[in-house]
Amino acid sequence: MISFEGFTLLILLFILAPIIGAIALLFLFIFEKRIDLLENKNLKIELEKELQQALYNQLNQQIQPHFLFNTLNVILSLARLNRTKELVRALEVLSQFLKFKYKSTEPLISLAREITYTEQYLEIQKLRFGDRLRIQLDCANDLLQASIPPFVLQTLVENAFKHGLERKMGEATLDIRISRKNDDVLLTVIDNGSSGLTAFQNESEIETEQPHEKSGHGLDNIRRRLHLCFGDHAQLELAPISEGGTLVSVRWPCTYEQIDLR
Image (cartoon, rainbow, N blue to C red; front, side, top):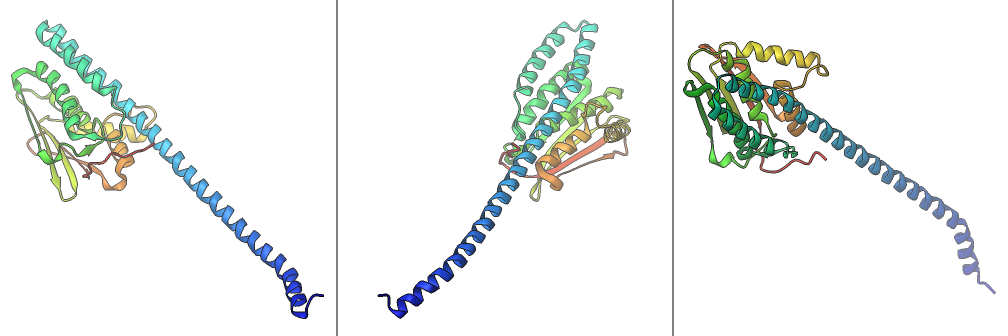
């Protein structure tokens, strides 16, 4: 015989069991929804990262045809002038430069590596300009291992020649300064070309208005890559110099870590 207390507990069990089961199912349903939400969020983040990586790789690829065109023009000029020794050296430097250039797939590299790339390009220009080219490059030692998107400095220097120094009669000067400003790296490229600012502005405007019809090199390309790596914490500005020439400055957060866009 079941006691009255036992019978009462049994009735309560039959009454409470479905309620407890319903509550458990409700919590399970909410938990599964939460898991699905987190999985969808993670998937969205991964897709955004893959899209950023694809866009970044595309921007890097867009730089290469412009560089090759300009460098081959330099080599062609040396060939036309029968400057065989300089021509051979230019081809050697170009080979070394491309060896580094096409191996670089990281979103960020060290400033030391970026300076090496740029110096190889500058050596080609020195062969062409000869003694009338003056170059000053200063970088604080503690910033040599700081991170920078590849080809930022090299592209600015390349454009300084294309839009300014190529048109300069007499002495051509290029001043590159890399320093620390609070928590940021500040890069400035100054040339004494006579019409660099106008050409820079025209190129940037064309690329902004017709991004699919241009190769994407120049200021717009740098801005977009900086934004992918640092968001709104990076900026690029340019200004004319009163005595002639252009000053381009780039500022971004100082970091010694690599950014994984993948």
